[in-house]
Amino acid sequence: MTAAVGDSSFEDLLTDLAASFINVESDALDGHIQSALRRIVLFLGIDRATVGRFDDASRQWLRTHSWARSGIAQVPSPLTEAQLPYLVGRLRSGIVTVCSHLPDLPSEAAQDKAMLRALDQKSLALFPLIAEGQVMGGLSFGTIRTEHPWPEDLVRRLRLISGIFANALMRRHKEQALRRALAENVALRERVETENAVWREEVMHQFDFDELVGTSPALTRVLRQVEQVAPTDSTVLILGETGTGKDLIATAIHRRSRRAERPLVRVNCAALPATLIESELFGHEKGAFTGAIARKLGRFEVADGGTLVLDEIGELPLELQAKLLRVLQSGDFERLGSPTARRSDARVIAATNRDLAAMARAGTFRADLYYRLGVFPIELPPLRERNEDIGLLTAYFVAKLGPKLGRQITRIPDRALAELMAYDWPGNIRELANVVERSMILSAGSTLEINGLPRATGARTLPSADSGLVAIRTLKQVERDHILLVCQACGWRINGRGNAADRLGINPNTLRSRMQKLGIVRPTA
Image (cartoon, rainbow, N blue to C red):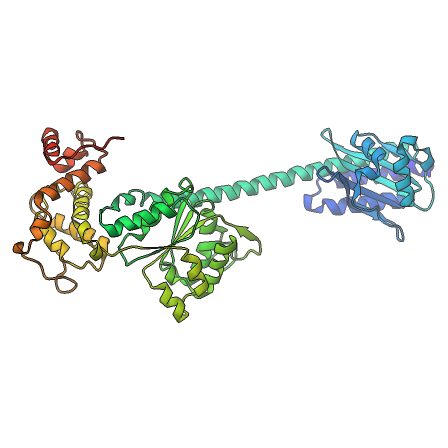
């Protein structure tokens, strides 16, 4: 055998093996190593060859590649380092171990000899796989049937083989790490791009919280519920007619929660076709359906750690309600076109103007989903039930819309308030804002004249001045509330362009005088 090793045919084998590993693709590396082990075993006339790696977490040696002759058992895997302490110690130290006759092993290898005898091992040659100064594992050659000599020139050549394997495995390890890093970078970029889109949507709502204007008991009760539920992670169901400010309440809950620094993501279930809602909520993989030209993150993924607002939840198709229930209960979901389960820690706030309880009884909305969503219901009162807030809201909209429209309305007459308070407001606050804006455009001077208020339907009989309506809210009270709202909106800044005096269209000193006369004092910290 020694002569065969020195023959040029073995050199040819080594040269061929080395060349085959130069440009081998990572995906083909395992097959190349397997083929190389087979060729070496057959050429040398030994019984088996094995490549293994260390698992530091479990302190085990794991077989990764092997080839054995027919009828020869493979090296067991895993093997604990305690089973072969001597050999593993030398391997970790980067030392080659060869043994043609097991009794030749030193006395400190008694545990190893017992283990090798149990495996019917007659002889072995063990080489560390070293790349870039790191011991990655080991390459072993052994015989079961007879003992085998390991001359120095053979050991030198097999050490070259171990170096070729080690460098190829290290190269693949780096390529895989690079691929993972690139995949993580792509995923991060996708998430950032999606979150940026969400933040842009949120910018449009960032001042909406100021529109929670009013002092009525009905609104005060709602705001108290917001303060109670916001610090928790409970699901919230916001109920109310169109235009009552459900989105504002959802925003208020998010901004008062521990998730305020994470995204507030909104999905209007009524604004998307049924075929696209699932993709919007849970995302999809490239090619999941016709038109899916790229992977897309769903809103549940983007809202992870934040808040997901499902507006018009009553419009969610029945087939998707079961999937939504699963996410609410376990946090698990799958993207369209992917079998991989994902998790989302998104707090869900649902909103609707429909009667979900009646829908659940009728079978058009899942009863179990209704009860899961309704952990903490908040019902917003319609504007007709908080009539006393109409004056404050009108003054607020006048102050807010003035700069936008280029109009300076400084007087809201009692007659105008009487008209507004006599109307039923089926469109609620949104309709009031539209009427105020239209009236400001059509008002000729600095006095608000109500224009475009529907009178054919939904309006109550307008009381006369003798009915006592004027006494309910005097001009002085309206003026005080109006100045107070403008000052609050300006952060109590009186002077300067765009601040309180400028918005009200009066001299700063005149404003201060009126504030003193009306008893308006800036609150202390």
